View 1: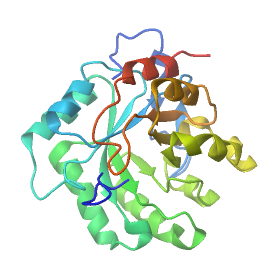
View 2: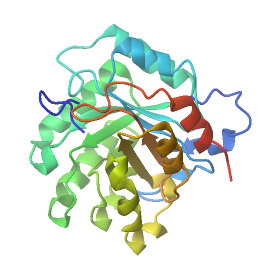
View 3: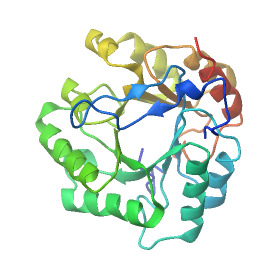
Length: 260
């Protein structure tokens, strides 16, 4: 999901109906596991947007929402006041904000990953980190386990992983949220039908799906699928589906926030 040259890349306290749906991220029985809460589903938005556009999301808060910020394929070379203000506006409305950091499927030096994560914390006061290009195999688990431990040791409370597919089960012992699907809507149905049985035992609040190239009707159909506590669908297409918000975002979040 990284924005490349070729492959570009809240809930207000007074919202009563779904206050109980807000996620209590970071509440663990042991390091690296267990996100509690989420009676209603919500969005995890890869908001790879200009600071002004990011701030506009905060104008319409939604219970349980998580937003990923990405100023420049990571935190960038220097802090930007406009992003700091946008992140603060999101958090004031109850949104958890994560900083985007790519990991090269386990090939990027861990020191570089942690350096980006700590810049986000120092410059923008984010709540956690979104580790993109996450590997999916057992062999790279020690790498991600070490990254998550170091990120949390610096005060980042939420670690999200994005393999974009169902990874080895051990990744759920590492990340608070794991993206188990990232792709176009046309592939979504087959992917959800192929979900391994063990994943159904993972709390939905730990699972996220990111769907692009979806019409309004398709986005709402995706919202009716169970199994993921976080869903984001957009009309955006490759090469950069995350560079603009879908026109149906409000309707999607309303559908997800309708508690069963």
